[in-house]
Length: 209
Ligand SMILES: O=C(O)CCC(=O)C(=O)O
Image: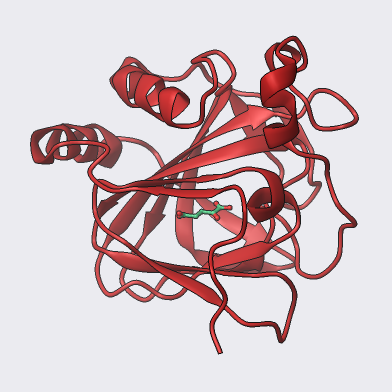
């Protein structure tokens, strides 16, 4: 049995053009990626953080390098899609998935808020579930598409990317969760938006990233 999309999940095909994707990939390939190590295991995917760094063993964030200029246009488009400001999207996480790599069931770290993820190169699937052993909602992520996780999809459901067939990059922009109830300053100042930015639910299940 399959589930339908949870509230707060938005999929947007063709957020970037083919030419933009090629330019992004060229810039991304020049970055220095780091391995992801959690509980003594090194994942197959590799990452680069801008704006804020996330400690995979500590679960803590700390200020990181400034977002590079080549992400500026993409960040603006991601912000529009998430109905956030550019400044709200304070962190950019670029992940390289070589063939056979994916990411297991998780919810993103509670230090972050809204998630906007852009897919480049190889298509893949994104799966969401409310909890272990509950029906899955499965989406095909086309290259150059983006998805947003807010509300229920972000805070109550888990997601994963099953192993990819060819190299894929994702550029994930995230807001910071600066308030105890999960509101960024600008969201708090704009009551119409605040509900969408969510309240962190009970934390259970697999680790966060
Ligand atoms: O690559 C993606 O689209 C998802 C990445 C993700 O879930 C994460 O880094 O926490």
